Image (cartoon, rainbow over all chains, first blue to last red; front, side):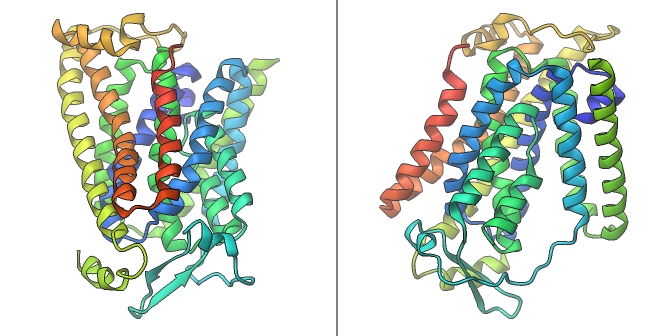
Amino acid sequence: MPLLTVFFHVDIRYAIGVSLISVIATSSGAAAAYVREGFSSVRIGMFLEVATTLGAILGAFLATVVHTQALAIIFGLVLIYSAVVSWQQRKDAAPEMKGHSRWSDKLELSGSYPGRDGKLVKYEVENIPGGFGLMFVAGTLSGLLGIGSGAVKVLAMDRVMKVPFKVSTTTSNFMIGVTAAASAGIYLHRGLVAPGLAFPVMLGVLSGSLMGARYLVRARTAVLRSVFTVVVLALGVEMIVDGVTKWF
Amino acid sequence: MVLESQTTPERDHGHFDDRRMETVMGRLLQVGVLLASFVMVIGGFLYMRAHHGETPNYRVFSSEPLKLRHFGGVAEGIKVGDPAAIIQLAVLLLIATPVARVIFALVAFLIENDKLFVLISSIVLAVLLYGFLRPQ
C-alpha cells in the first residue's frame, strides 16, 4: 500500500481498500503452503480472531473520521515498527514457562507440535488477556490502514502469550485473512475498492506470492532481510514526512 | 504430506479432528483463491479492453458508483457483462474465502461437540457478517 501512495500517488483511501484485498489474497494464497507445514492452531487463531475482527470493524469506522494525513503518519510509524520487528531475529527455542496457566487449558488453547527430533513439544499460552487486548489493537490498525498488521500479531503471540514460533507464524497468517475480511465488507460498501486498481494488484500479489514461495528456498535470507528492512524503513519515513508536510 | 502422517497419531488424544480440519481448510482457501483469480483475469481483460488508452486518475478521491457497492448491483452488472462488476465479483469471492474458513471451522467444532469453540466461532462469524451486511 505505501508503494501505491508513495510511488503512484494514489489517494490513501483507494490504497487502503485495495490493500485489504491484497492482504486477503496473500493470506489465503499462502495458506495451502503453511497447512502442509501444519503447526497452526485453529483454536488459538479463532479465539484471537474475536478480538481482531471486532478491532477491524472499529478501525474501519475510525478511518472515516481520521484525517488522511494522520493516516499517513500512523502508517509510517507502523512501518518503522514492522521494520524493527522483522530485523530482530526470532529464536526457535521453546519459550520458558512461568508456572502453569490455568486459563490456557480451560480455553483449550494448549497444544503440541512435533519437534525436530520427532518428539512432541507441548506448549500452553500465557497472559491471555494481554494477548487478546493487543490483538484488538492489531485488528484496529488493520481496519484503519488496510494492512495485515502481522508485526503486532507476532508481538502479541510470541512475546506476550509465549506461543512457540512455529505455531504463531502459521496461525497469524490464517488470522490476517479473516481480520481483513471483517473490514473489507465495510470498505466495499463505501465504494472504496476500485476495480481498475483491484485487478492488477490482486493478480500481482497472487503471482508474487506463488513465485516467492518457490524462490524463497534458494534466496539468502540475510540479504533479503536487510533489503526488506531498508525498503520498509524508507517507506515509513517517507509516509511520515509526506503526511506532516501536507498537513501543515 | 509426510509431516501429516507423522503428526496424526500423536494428535489422537484431545482434539483428534483439528489436524484434518486444517488440511481441508487449506484446500478450501486454495480453491477460493484460484476461483477468484480466474474471475479476476476475465474481468481484468474485459476491463482493459473497455478502458483502453485512458489514463485513470486515482490521485483524486471519488467514490465508486453506487451500483457496485451492493450484491444486487454487482449481479445486475454481470448480467450485462460489465467488466467492473465482474472484477467486483472476483473481489467478493476473495473476501468470501476467509469467511468460508470460519464457517467450516464452526461446522467442525459442532461435529467435535466443542460447545465453547462453537460459541467463539459463531461470534467471529457474526462480526464478519455484520461488516458485510450492514447497510452503510
